[in-house]
Length: 156
Image (tube, rainbow, N blue to C red; front, side, top):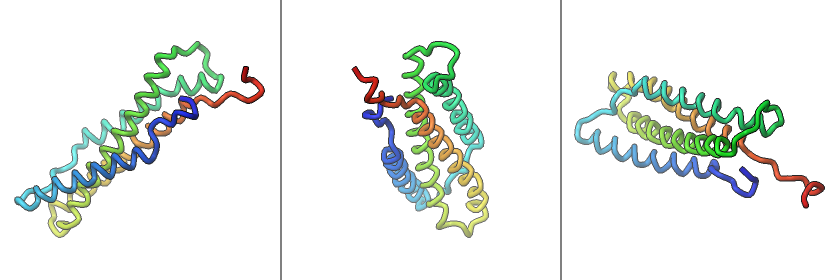
């Protein structure tokens, strides 16, 4: 990715997270008014967020190595493009998941007196951390795919 093409920025990630936080909070507050509670967080979903974060970094690592001159094989441009796209998608998906779980966490704060709600908070906190990890890995992997602009001396 060239310097002029910024890709997914922290601003994009924050906008997605804020949008999904508002949507999630609205959904769960309406659900609560009808007598429902936020469901328990799926540990499978948390595991998948962490697994995808690791896969994103491992998919972009060969691109990073090649760009730093440490690659032993030539890099297929299509593979580099796919790695960048995966990194950007992971950053946006992670911020979406963060917003979704943060909205649930905010909805639960009003009912912390209930034992069932208090029992859901550790899972929500871990889900928030896993979503933040995916977002961070996506942004970091995108940065690993950055191509430095050529020096002024080497331009033709």
